[in-house]
Image (cartoon, rainbow, N blue to C red; front, side, top):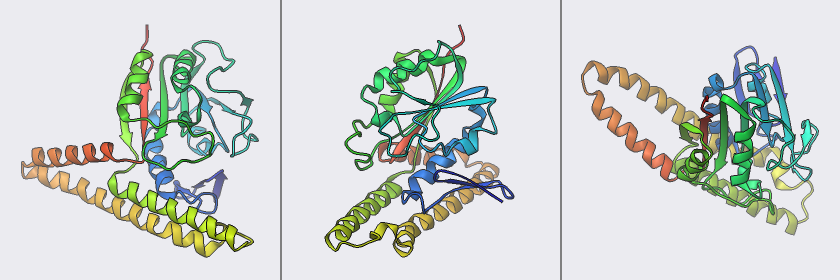
Amino acid sequence: MFQKQGFLIHEQNSGRYFVDYQQTLSIAVNELLLELLLAARPYMRGTLLDVGCGKRPYRLIYDRCVDFSVGTEVQFSPHGTDQADLIRYAEHLPFADNSFDTILCTEVLEHTRHPFQVVTELTRLLKPGGYLLISTPFIYPIHEAPHDYWRFTRYGLQKMCQDNGLEVIEINSKGGIIITMLVLIHNIIVRGMNVVSKILHLNPPLYEQKWFRWMICLPQWAYLQLSRNLRLGVNNLTIKEKLEQRFDHLVKRTNALNEVNHWLTCGYLLIARKPIG
């Protein structure tokens, strides 16, 4: 049995989540963010605020972890406002101080007019001991124009949180060099084919045709599967190298890979905590 919410699908029998290629062609980026959010489920609890919720795809994840959730959107959202409980800019939200245990803000901060003010506002709404989860793009084409204003490094995200008194728990990258290049190439192809569709007056346009969507998504699926297999192999290698007392060398190689991923990545997921007292 399948549950579907926006571009996200949950296969209940297996417990597996995956991105619907009929809803988005950005399979790789969304799958990587999905993995990070699934790993972040322990931080989702109590009352949750989903800022810029869109079609609320991640409700399939957090509804199993929280007691209650509220979604906000802006009127001009390209994802529609049907799933939102409140239409309001993220800079000014009509909730009392310390209202939420968890605040989720995925791929929204770059579209806000005053992102520093948004983080201050979300900090105000967060209960002491509560968690803020923010994902943003880094190396990624302009999207949802003209409302695409900012890009943030991991250090910029960390500084915004620290300036608001938040404790940064972790910052994870959404892939590294290979996935970034793959995403850029796929965006160039899609936008090029959109131009061709307009010139040739194709109806439906190429991006709506199933064969074209498969062509665009196949390399992304292939890379994701390969990278997951490699990660599984590294985990097995970790155990082996521990036994051979060469674990320090593996740690150094892993740290070097993480540094490269942070240097050239599609984006980040940051998890921060509001201190108690």
